[in-house]
Length: 589
Image (tube, rainbow, N blue to C red; front, side, top):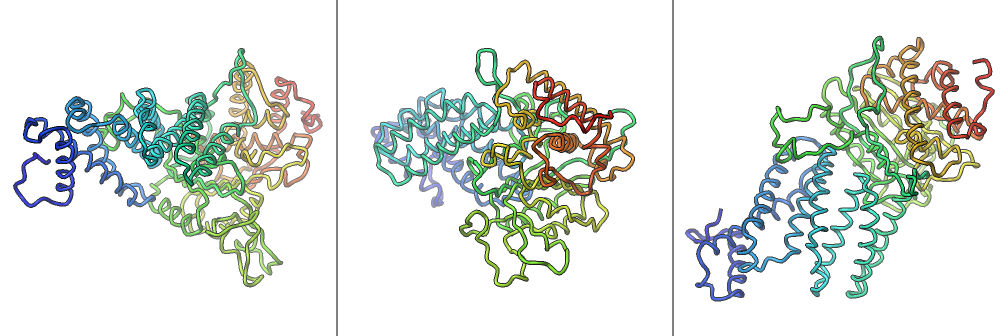
């Protein structure tokens, strides 16, 4: 730590700190008149500020994949920022008088701490860190740390403020704080208007695009749940205590647990915000528990004692990949595979434009059915501008089923939401490890309003099955009381689906091996509910309108089970939409 006295030739960092100190001191009065204690306070502050910026900038150089290398570096960065934050609180008056500390500079420190918590959430998938990020971002707004920025003739400071708003909005979206999001969007809109009016900058179009993206993201849900006063109810789709059907006595299931997930979004034209498509956002929430308050559990990330750890199970670790190239996707996949603990599952979720084979293949191997699009780092028009030198060559910018074969050496759970999802139906389990693929319909009925830009119907069923059920039933809003009644009935349906699966005599054992994990159990029961609903719906009449799976489920015991069909009709009756569904499939129930 610097003391303000120079005993050795200064290092580069030290000289920069002292140069800044001299500038500040001389502008505030005669340097010699400043008491030694106050001089040391400013020096220490400059050092901490300098050190914090170095460490923060170094975060960019850490590898994005792998779960071990970054933790100690994050811990050191948190340490310095914690000291810096406390230091400026304890010595605010001296820093105001001698350093000329401005409120926007305090806001910058708080914003960096918010960013640290957010990135810690991305690295760990622990939702409680989102609450911590929110508290710092919220404090900046409540205390108006950035309010004076607009009075300074420095566009780069205003951009800091705009970026703060964009980051705050992302955190609020992830916490489902939609009321706050709407207020922030209005404030951001005013700030952008003021910024572009005053500085006439080239990034006006980019900032307006940010506004358009978040506005579309907020409106992605096709159904509104309303209170009696017509205000919108914010529903959370993370795993709650009562979320997954409980395992009952006599249910024999595997002991595998979901440890890692790759969530990949590469759909053309789907609504997105901050490199997060609607589908990615929904699947991310389906793989997380409701956030807890961190304050009672730990002092800072990475430093908690084992005795203080939360009693509930952790969320699976996630990688969020927006429009990755094949090499990026494979790198992250290999890192997840390498670090997967024993008795654990790797989940791969693909929401992507389909890539279809051209020409007739002589064989029917794992590279002959096409797959889903990976980013080619060049413009793609409707996913079709894909050129091959020769018809016999396979598409390079595509994740083929065969590309995943090496990773089936460990338990693998795959979800494919794509117009060519059926390519993954032709899987072969080479290594005898548990392997399941849940595959979306490849097309939806024309009579169904096209919602693909606002997210896929299949993923909506896996994230919020009741909202998806309402949408296919033609409903766009619902009262809270009825919503809660239907949610309770849906929980009963899930319990019955769990019994159907575990009591089935002909089901493939892979499904049961995954059924011990809460997240996978919920995804499997929702998949069956989705498939059964679509098969009973009057306008879903083509085979391509139905989800499929590898291995195949025994239909008569699951998706076409008369007991389950009766439940779906009862749910439709509660909503007064029974006429949308076929009755004849259960006449002999």
